[in-house]
Amino acid sequence: MEITLELIVFTVLALFIGVSAILAVTTRRILRAATYLLFVLFGTAGIYFQLNYSFLGAVQLLIYAGGITVLYVFSILLTSSQGDKAEDLKGYKLFVGLGAALASLGICLWITLGHDFRPSHFEHGELHVQTIGHALMSSGKYGYILPFEVISLLLLACIVGGILIARKR
Image (cartoon, rainbow, N blue to C red; front, side, top):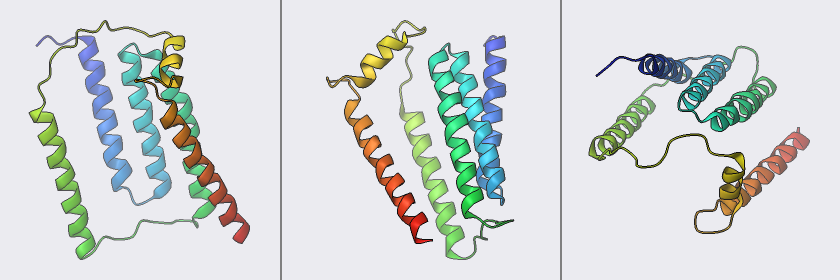
């Protein structure tokens, strides 16, 4: 295997994402966890840019790293008191958590090792935004209009629920 600059950049990004993800789930401070999540999202955008998917990379940076992380931070700051820490896992919660983590790892390894990875015969490269828009908003066989509508209803329900919770306070 030849070591190229692409491989080095991918390895650095993968290690950055892996370390940030582990820190996000193991830190006791919730604001630090949101910061580590931001690092994971930046690393994922870096991988998209490395794969020449600049549209996906830009969406990752704007929507997830920008909007969603800011929403998380505002939610944390508005709902938690100063210095909130995660609770200690003791007793059966520790064993249930470890069991769920090991089961998830086993399923991921089973799927990954059982998959026959073949090179794709599709031409790699950038898709036009118009092509992506038609694919996302069409109602045909490979269209995604129904998931968009379901997500919009879910977001509407979350907004209404947030307003109702805020009114009670």
